[in-house]
Amino acid sequence: MTETTETTQTATTPQTAPTTGATQATESPTQDGPLLRVRGLVRHFPITKGLLKRRAGAVQAVDGIDFDVLPGETLGVVGESGCGKSTMGRLITRLDEPTGGTIEFAGRDITHLSPGRLRPLRRDVQMIFQDPYGSLNPRHTIGGIVSTPFRLQGIEPEGGVKKEVQRLLELVGLSPEHYNRYPHEFSGGQRQRIGIARALALKPRLGGADEPVSALDVSIQAQVVNLMDDLQEELGLTYVIIAHDLSVIRHVSDRIAVMYLGKIVELADRASLYASPRHPYTKALLSAVPVPDPRRRTERDRILLKGDVPSPIDPPSGCRFRTRCWKATGECATTEPPLVELRTGHRVACHHPEGEGTDPGHEGTNPKGDGPNSSTMTEISAGVAATDQ
Image (cartoon, rainbow, N blue to C red):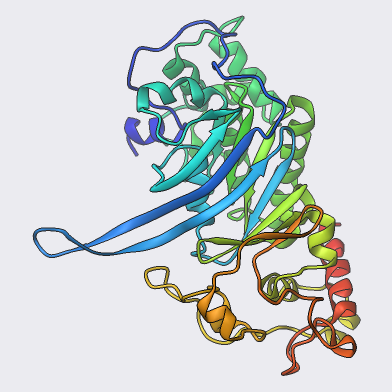
């Protein structure tokens, strides 16, 4: 790994001369609305063929998503592998260039800012990467890694860089004596703490976390998740956390967005989503959560989705989940369902949401017998709660 890699993973842009002053803040308009506002966000990766690199198609990784993130809250993003979660995370932190749509941070449009104009934004928006092994340069000491943001931003903290880095190490549960050690001398959980310290160095307002605990043991996952919670309370951070583990997302999130094939299919607060999921895909995800109680495990119904996830190069027309959905109709094949608010704070993109338009005696039940009823979802939520403890 080279110096270039280290610079990239600290989410900084080394064009233009750095500014000075440890307390200088990013220039942005003051506002009382969302800290982050995303509208119609699109990212298509072109597919080229031949010597002339002619465009033959595109991978529709993210294809028109809308959401807001309020100051001080945690938005969790879940979905299957390949649904566009990580791409969305890189877009909102401006580590990747959007194909379309808008991204507003603190009331300012940052969608297509140049590298030079992005530099001051990097102080307010940082990223915690998935791989605690690959995100740290093995040739640099921990002190050098955590101090990189100060060097690239031209900031001299009060008391000096070394003192501030040692304070950050203590903040994330490491010893100041680790300053001169190298990444290979630490465990996975400790390396992730180092990554968190680096992300917090410039006191950001928004922290993106892409699978921050997926590469760690279960016991270490709990430590890192609790650390992030404590730092949020202490520093007033706002998080967008991307994860596969529904129990982790339930523990850390205020609101949850469920993604499928580049689209947000359901967005709701934590309690509402787990107690009463309205999109069939969300129900299928929750039914796959392991339940530690053997009695509940045998009583509940598991939804087994048919077929494979369609290719993002050529997604299905209309609703993208229709090829695997037991409630699909002709309307689902011709009309794409908008993300609409069914009740306060609960938005769903489905023509036939759960709990509506079903027979009263079979509400929320798959007519083929492989979908859960409302009592089953209560058991699933209870099972997820048990795994958090």
